[in-house]
Length: 326
Image (tube, rainbow, N blue to C red; front, side, top):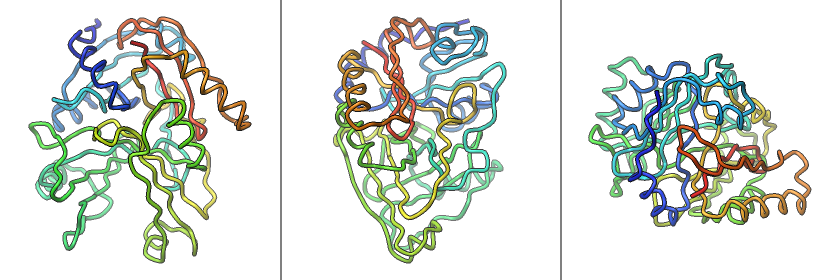
């Protein structure tokens, strides 16, 4: 059975187009009910729409058989209109995108989760049996950060900014201010997100030095190039694109195709799909991005997302981006 996306949610999405944010991060899960127990019940996300059973038209644009999708849910943190999750359970799920991946391998990698009172959130998750990679530092920290190997090998990053609390649910969690993908060339990603999708480069940092090399495992002289795209005045639905310099990374983006499990890509509401397609095709031709998959215009698609024109783009790195017309 399908529960359609509420009209009020679509209206809010239209209003939030100014945010230049992703609407949903697409996560393929082994069992939807197990995933909802984490994202809805523990983290307090709100279910906007749910569909049990096949979604033939969405399956088609993902290159799958009509019965390939078993169930889906669209979720946001209450009070947010974008930066949500699109959870998908496939009838025959594939291997995880990040199975055996190194931290520097090229792929969609992490979902950030804002928290209030990170010490309490850490303790309650540990008590529930979740195992973090390390404990967080408490002295002289501006942003508390701790990583959790999440379901389907998706890295979950819990963050609390001192003096700048993010919006969270009643349970103290906010999903997701941003998601993280790894890129071989952040300059090309910058051109794509700014020119094709009209996003702002909300922040840009480079990190290097012996401590960074030791912590991440970079060779001497290795650096991180970190760029966040979205809207400078809107904290949710941002894309953090990270380039590890000085290392050889395996390209895992070809794995991030349905019905693989894990973080597959993002979807964005778009007022002018034609313009985005023209710009994407021009950029591919102009910059000789022969490895980038050709943008696809799917026409009007009826799915858990409602009935909208949809198109699929891929960033130069390989990140899947579904455009939803309004």
